[in-house]
Length: 481
Image (cartoon, rainbow, N blue to C red; front, top):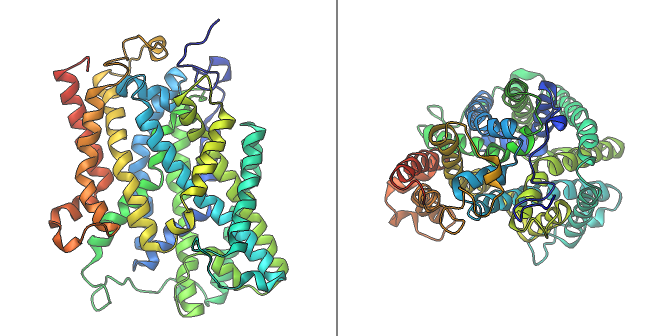
């Protein structure tokens, strides 16, 4: 049978015989992806910004409970019809217009891919620095990092590309190895912090900087709101492309319960390790160290350091391939299904991840949350609003699967583009633009009306709600546009 120009084996619906993922598979997937260094950094960056340990953990749990809702809603279509994320987007954005949300999600994944490669490369750099101290010299190169750091970054990038070349089946083995490795490392890390700080009492007794009499008294909400938005943004990518995984579910019950059990609890547990150890660094070293790699460097035993860093490398590799390669590879393949395979899409992801200079994205906790996480949530929130409005409200969960792969079918709209979806996306995203420009320094915040800064703090929520309502209005007024 001849494939449609909108189809290839990776984008085709998953047949019933291959839908074998059970509840435990989805719980394990989220536990594996949550137990990673960025989760640790996410939690500890909140402490670094002034939150107490319980405020940080509660913020993360609440953010993940909120983002679980769009995750489960978007997962439904994947399980019911066996289709991946970019194909689902054709129903709302059009057979060609679906490339807009697919590329937006893919570019964010490229950034995350680069961040994970940077973390793995830094682990290698720290290991080598133990045996060759000259490599740890602080001199900075033209890219903002040293030549040895860049070499380690590219070496770990090469390992990632090798795994991509081996194909999708290599991911399961990596995740099986990775999850226990990083969880054990995290517990050992927590035990060390407990002992070095003299118990949980002093370790978690650091007050919130927002309490009365503290340096940031009265400023809690101004940090909490964008912080919560950042927590939602952490998995905003997966909340869109979760059909890439839910399409393999044996039933809706399996994917719903598995994900509900796996995501919020795993994130809360591993984030507690992050905030507890970060809080302990204040007691142990006299200042906050929010990067776990910098904490590990404090260990003087080379064997302990090497084992810990190698464990981080393996764990980071597994998370990176599962969370940041599978979906963008499909998204790039969606551009030209006949020409771009999964492997080629993975290579494109890797190259863009290097060009984005990820070390700058995680250079400090403020930039990590307020610039990187909140900024891309301003783009992904409207996409999520449109997808959910289209599937659950407008179409009432009924899709014509054959038409999703037909260039001249009902989802063609205007030359393959849905004007209604594009207009709704722009209306959802544009209100966040002034706040973003002020955040990155392209506009003087003093000259910007305060309302735009407030909107930017709610970037994901504002974009989602505006696009949701606008899409339904436009679709009602012009069903065929």
